[in-house]
Length: 202
Image (cartoon, rainbow, N blue to C red; front, side, top):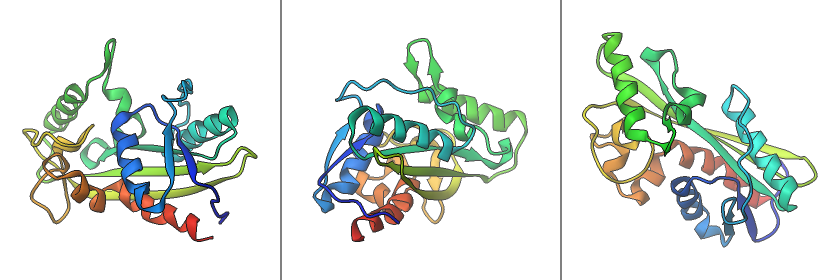
């Protein structure tokens, strides 16, 4: 594994919630974080059918544009009774002409489960794939997941995305009912991050 040297890292996302999570996770390491939106970088088309493929697109595009190491995360929720959907298309399920509407996406997801008369618990998992790319084209991949189940109606006002309908395994609250600090010890992103931080150890 190539070690990371430096004190500044570009996070290749325009998602404010995701940037906030990653910034908090990196805070103890003294790494200054800058987001792609802050640098006015365009969002590349995510044309791959896997989390790692799309994360690679975002990380390499940002690293090439800025000459900085760039970290990208591609993540989503897989629902077992929907054969793993929405999966890599999680954000697409939330797209509207006026931006992303995750309440609509969660309603759509639960309705799809109901249409299948899927038994409870409706198991699901969040997946997260981190790709750290360097300007020379090298990259490292780190994958994480959080197992759990869907709940309805939605609960909680914290977090972002599908958090209000996802209850992690071994807990009776959704991610959206937890503090950011608690969620950041349990989440798919935290799992990927725990592997990623080894890169600072050389």
